[in-house]
Image (spheres, rainbow, N blue to C red):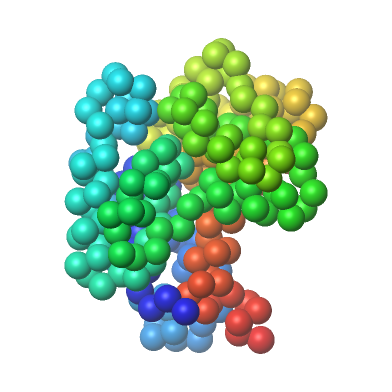
Length: 225
């Protein structure tokens, strides 16, 4: 059982807040002292992940590695990133970190496979989609990942950046796009976890991450029974 959780956040702030809020609301406790011991690093200084990955801006990798060192120095033995796009660098990050880093795309693929899903449609950032951050794990589970078209990606990015700047997003366009596919939708961007979709069937990767956090920190309902 892990003793201290580190959240490498700030990518963006709303997603970090959503994860923390959901951890608190889903932890079965009777007093303050029973909550998960955690450190939240809101590393908002990390350069835009999509821009860095696609060669349009500074690489965020050195900043991500430095942030991991900060969390390790605080005694964190398990670390999560409420940012799917950053998982592009997962292998290098884990290789340079003694703490266990949970892999959100891999966890999502495992859950879908366990539930017999054979096809899914990915809603994510341009960086996540174009670099196959999810596809590599879905291929291992023999799940066909349907990637969005260029126009669909553009609509996703518009909504994502609206959420990042605190605007109320219009989700009807995305719901219409996803609904046409007729397969489960994977929310592969944590900004999407910060809003509510009412008209599509979806699997929220950050919810999957939440469940694994609670399990590994001994805070799942099963561990409390």
